[in-house]
Length: 343
Figure (tube, rainbow, N blue to C red):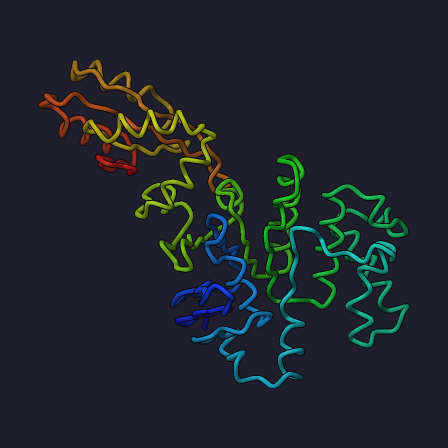
């Protein structure tokens, strides 16, 4: 049984300009203990989807199941109880500015009816986990963005959730702070076995921490699967676009590469640490006496493993392309044809 199951979920909003379809027949299965990324451009529907997972937004059609329980069939009291198993953190932290750090973490415990002594003891434990036990008496205005998000994570953990939903939780942070927050989330996942769902528009976040990913566009899932597989063999245009943006290429550079890729016979090769111990491309050129053009190359951390990719351009009259492809395969490289790689 999946931890979270989304079945044919659609969400429509009525506006003065007509009906807006934020989600269109979305189906996903998220297993217990996964770190699952949901990524897309602005307006793709990803934040609406995550809010449907705890019924902050009620789907217009379809079902959301948590451990086999259909949220739509629960009474208001049962739904409130179910939500105790689902923590949530947000882009802008949503802390109570007039309360101290420890009181922010205690807040959900007080709502559950915990006594002050018990709540404060639990809150101090959680602040130690997130590395802020020495800032318990501080106020949010005295904290950095990363520290505020750590407080928000501690608060979300207060009710011992089985699921943690993160809606653009690192979007307001600088890259170094983002890395530290992702490291914290990964350690929480491993320590407590909490299922984590990360909503983001940054492919770098997905490849750093997520095991699985769903890529959204226009309210629909364009592609889903293991992060490593989608990185190595993206099938949808939006996945390719997000991966390409993750390289840091500027728009003009992307256009130049796109034009070259669309007008030549090319291969995309993906390599990891285990396949990067020799100059494979140089040796291939020497072996076959055929030139290749490296149109694009970069290396990334995908799930803690160094992964690199190259786009190789071949001459139109190259008669040895198939032999060269076989040579690359024998050297342990992942390859795919990328004629018309992007539009």
